[in-house]
Length: 258
Image 1 (tube, rainbow, N blue to C red):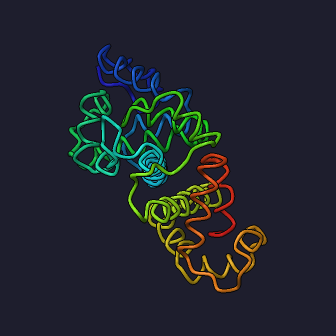
Image 2 (image 1 turned 180 degrees about the horizontal axis):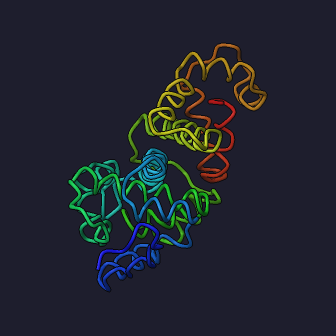
């Protein structure tokens, strides 16, 4: 019988067991999630999903760049090229291997599956900051030993002697991008992906960053020169991450992009 116009809708049907299990398995690996972040992952699309994807992309990049700088070519998984783990092709494989997206009632493309992995990392960061984000990357994308996780979060690391010559600058650039992405996410809670991308681009422009650098007491104390270039700042940020950990470096970089 067709319900009448005034009939209240009944409760939603429970998800099939395999779908519910896929959601539960992913959440178990990501850790406790903010309700908005969890709803965005379950939907697999929409404004909140895209916001998490944008943040997750830069969070993943900075964690894996730091891993490459610290461990170098001795890593049995990536041989010092952890950037390969951030490609859409690899992230699609991760999604299929770990069940990400199996709860959707529509068939996602490979690109969307890669986006969903990034959104998962973004959801972990939005729910539990850097500690939860690093744990999510270690469980979802690239294995990270417990000692390395400790150094990523708390410092006490060094540049691997076989890391590329510009490894510190590359890591510093990733720190700036993570600071801009997470800062834009926090300061613009109603902004969609397009708006956040535009804000982030302005925050990362060399003109904007260097104008903030010239005002930074932190930079002046370390460089003690008025002849600043962006590479100098990126090396300083990388050194801070190695000495004091990822949360410290991003916190220092945030006012340089604000």
